[in-house]
Length: 342
Image (cartoon, rainbow, N blue to C red; front, side, top):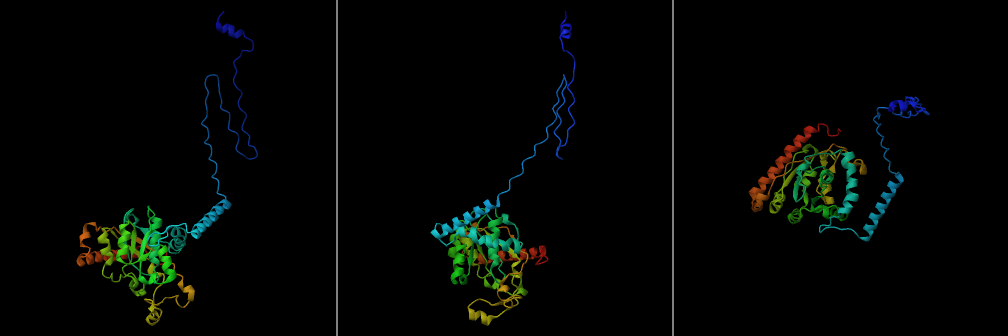
């Protein structure tokens, strides 16, 4: 008897196929259950499984977020009251600047002035450098916005150490704020020491002539003085980065200067603007002009250190910086046809 005949004699032997699966049924409006893969006696096909959707990201609990913020604020106050914070030899308080000063200034920088920055790659990532900018705006907000731009836009998140006029450091409360934010007196010894320590130093050679000029003279650079900033850069061999700032001229347009009142108060000028002094304290709110900040390619000075006391070299470099800033201002004004546009 053959094997096939023996198999046919076995009870219950018959060729059969699996029953077809039932049609999928929607349950309460949901997707049907995937069909069962069909199999036969010779092959088995597995359908491609559907990708499993990723679970939705869990949203942070607002209560937990506020708990963290309150805990961080209390820890900050505890450190401040206990004196557990550091300041450098110039009085710069890095923690206070990052936690208090810059967050307040960012409201003006982002929302009010809608600042755009170009050429941030020209600012060195490490080591010292001297940033030289045009000055305007009645109040030196351009210096503060420049410091925020470097802190927020530079890959290394560097701090800018500003050089301020003597008047700033003679006012008690303003002097303390300036020191805490990293500013120091605009003198060559302090500037050279900061740049030798690898710091970014910001200077505005126009001084009060720049921020106090009439609106009719907007974006026309004033005299740069004797070029003391160039001598400081030459002695330390640090590069000079010209910076052009458009937007500050329109925040407080100076229509007139009451000089007798300025002499009485002991200030360089007493401005009359479209809103001040007519609106009182409301006149101190800056107009929401559109700001553009352009960092120009750096000018190297390492090969000129021995000429730090040569007036011809100093004046030549100062004129080069001034002409670069003036030309860049004209280019930025073409990019921004509307002073108060978006």
